[in-house]
Image (cartoon, rainbow, N blue to C red; front, side, top):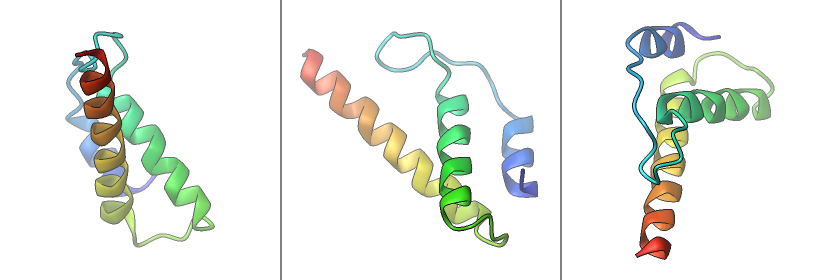
Length: 70
């Protein structure tokens, strides 16, 4: 795992997902960031880009879930 992701993960605070499913948003973002890293062939140097893209994707997904439920 990259230093940026490790550092960000070290400050991980458990929080429920916005849809009430109880899954930790930070964990989902971390997993997605790792998937993006692997998809690029595990090349270092894009940790922040991977994290912010993953965060954007997960939060957009959560927002869509909330809008559908309303």
